[in-house]
Structures are given as structure tokens and as C-alpha cells.
Image 1 (tube, helix red, strand yellow):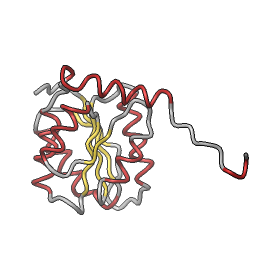
Image 2 (cartoon, rainbow, N blue to C red; image 1 turned 180 degrees about the vertical axis):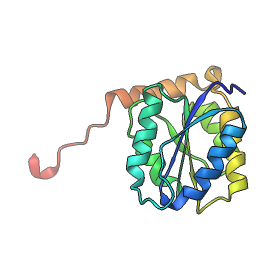
Image 3 (tube, rainbow, N blue to C red; image 1 turned 120 degrees about the vertical axis):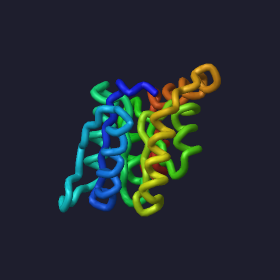
Image 4 (cartoon, one colour; image 1 turned 60 degrees about the horizontal axis):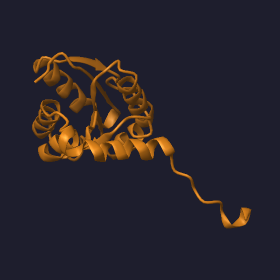
Amino acid sequence: MDTSKRIAIGCDEAAYTLKEELKDFIAWLGFSVEDFGTQQGEKALYPDISFAVAQSVADGKNDLAILCCGTGIGMAITANKVAGIRAAQTHDTYSAERARKSNNAQIASIGARVVGSELAKSIVQAFLNSDFESSRSGAKVDLISHYEEIGCRRPASKKSR
């Protein structure tokens, strides 16, 4: 495990308690942790937190990240809007491991209302302990990046034709 990696973490108010437990756990594992909030008692719109965390990874300020909200879904969707980011909703250790090994995901998203804190710790540990297997999955991840670069063009609506 490369404990020199910098880990960002963020949550909305639904996942504050889980974020605090995971932040302490990640530090206990030996990583440096940057907390993007939210803080106790603060309301937060999860897209704001998720975008800031994902941008910090895209900019190289952090190596990997953990996002928490009620389900983990919205955080992952938002993080994936940042160019170059691959965020995966992880609800078990296998999905966390495969997110890193097969997809080179930099962000794991966890639902505080879906998994308990002990499972969440195991998910985080599996995610942080896994490395991308470029020999097996490099071409697939390159293709994902290619599609991101060319973007998605929507066909013109029938009204504008």
C-alpha cells in the first residue's frame, strides 16, 4: 500500500457521521486526508462537494477520493462530470477493488444509508489497496477517455429540422 497518496474526502449532511469515521480510518491507514466537508450541522448540496473533490483529483492536488452521501449515486454522477475523472459507486469490497483494477477509478462513492460503517471501512481499504491493472484493462480505459474527449453530440430535435 502506497501511503504517500493524498486522499480527498467529502460528504453531504446525510453522510457526515460516516465521513468522519472514514476520515479517521484513512488517516489510521497512514494516508494524508483532505476534508472537503460538509461539517456537522451544515446543510450541503452534494453536487458542490462532489465537484470540488473531483476537481482536486483532476488537478493533481489529491490522488484518490472518497465521497459519501445517502446512496452514493448522486456523488458519483456529479464527480463523473469532471473531465478525466472516473468515479464508481461502491457498495461492497469487490466493486471497490474492481473499480481501481479494471477501470482505474480515482473516486469511490459510498452510500451512508446503504452500507454500515464497518463495511464502508472495508470498501475504502479495498479501494485504496488496489492498483490499476493496465495490461488487462488499459485499452478499455483508453477508449473511455477517447469517448470523453470526443463528447456526446445530441441529434437535433425534430422541431429544429
